Length: 461
Ligand code: P61
Image (cartoon, rainbow, N blue to C red; front, side):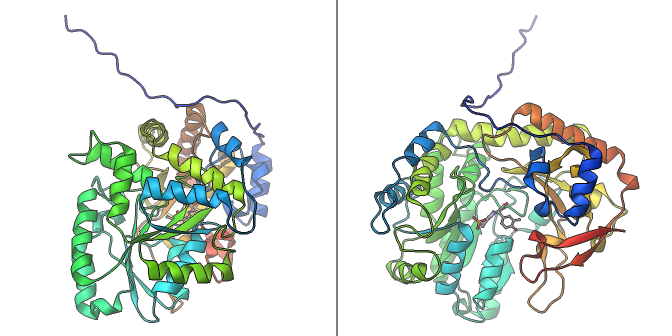
């Protein structure tokens, strides 16, 4: 008789020594809370939320090492030792030469956009990100999407849906000339596509192309270590490399970066801009004092920089990434068992429900993803985020964007929730799915000018 092979599971490479108690609410309380919040999960008080999957940004649990490093924070206005430690960690684990600290990712995007974009220039990128595109536009740039077509199709199983389509980039360069391209942004583990990775082969091909045309590659490295984990799992030749080695190789194929440390780097606040180009650094060091703070703290406390230095190191550990991405995959697989339509392959930082398929009777103009996020909250107190037509916002000429992806993002904070929490979340999504035919869309009754999804308000039809 053939011997049965017992499969081996991963488990979290940590244990808990402090917990935060959660509050549960009744359905009536939740109906009231979401109505008061204008059916926008960003406007809910966190007290009313049971399991908070709004974002993985700044919501990570820090380790005992990070907390103890915080006690060493050097809060000097100038020349802080904590900055030196953060700078050292960034150079060691990411390989960039010059570092400018910022209060978070968008602070770095602001500096970079102002420095590198001339009015009327194009800024190609592998799918838009809300704050990134806005800063590019505010600096006079025009965003151009050059991600592969597969990324816009929730069902397509391409293993690297974050890849840049070099032909699309080349068409843009041919049409306008390389001098009309400010730079190209490459995000690793593309957020809006569903946490989808870029392959090393694609990054290499892009490197060759951009060197030929004198175009800089700027890396949105917010989730670079998660991307590295997927390369290790999916790309030939990388199975025996460590996440740490892969991260360094990814960064080496780019000229500079913006980073929101609130994600991969396992902290609650912080970010930076990095560059290998001394002239860009000089300008950034000048500008940072206008918007963020001195070039040795950039809006951060010394203790925040200490936590980042330690968090970066923890983030490039293979066991950490296995558990992190493994938990996301677990939730996605549970949802699939219930027949819930999700973006596939399952991404790195969250599970994204395809709201168009979930609520086919709600047209995009009635905000299916916004509606679904509200319904899930009502069912269970699980907070998620709309990533569809509301998030996409308006073009500079005022027209609405109509993204093909109309998604609800269940984003998993790092090291925060357990598998049992994931079960509760999947069961809630399944319950709403069962009752989906009764769900009606919404109208927007208040629309802010910038990044409308944060504060927009809605009413039920
Ligand atoms: C998030 F609804 N992301 O995913 P900052 N690049 C990338 C990000 O994911 C990112 C930033 C730059 C957030 C927070 C957030 O539309 C939204 O540190 C790939 O947040 O400034 C942030 O970094 C900006 C949520 C941001 C949103 C914008 O939840």
